[in-house]
Image (cartoon, rainbow, N blue to C red; front, side, top):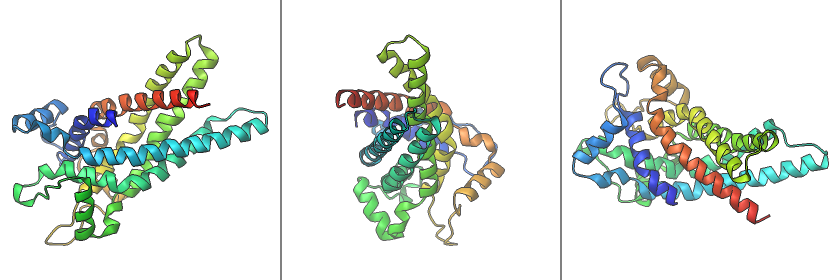
Length: 280
């Protein structure tokens, strides 16, 4: 939870970067510092923490489910491997990470959607803003105005993002730690830290394109005149962004995303590894 509070401003800037220049290939390229400066210059520094309640809710639901499912699957794999007198393979760890991430993402999607809606609300004209008071307020109002199924808008890219994130984070952490233990003389603490740093990079690189699409889909709302959504789904969004904005747009704000994901992943993995050690 503490990590969520610390990275909330970074997450806010990340979302604003992903929504900037929608449908336009050329034009000014916003930067993380520029976005932060504009928000602060408006005299509302606390706007950097917009959606904090949704971020905390997402963290509580998603992270708990993700780590819990991964730990359960890992124990099952370890028992199976021990019975067969062999080691758990990288592919098996990857499968556990993918499955755990996918299940947790589906469970946590409503909180994720509330977060994006709250963070993007400030981009609208004042008269069109929803001005959500909290994550619960956002969830209730979205359910009433758009229907309960709307809470799972962008669920597919959210699941794919989570799966990619887990492959990068949990799987590469476990594999890196195993390789460092086998081929280096680093202390257990150094192995954990190095493995978490490696996992943080791969988690960012593999998941950012899906995070980008997720943000676009969760932010979109029906046009009041046509009643249509800008994007029909994951593939349609990916196609339109690639055609209208260019492929590199998917990696806009990578530095900001890495700063958001890597430290959070490292802290989460180190703490989880320590708790796993003392509870054995």
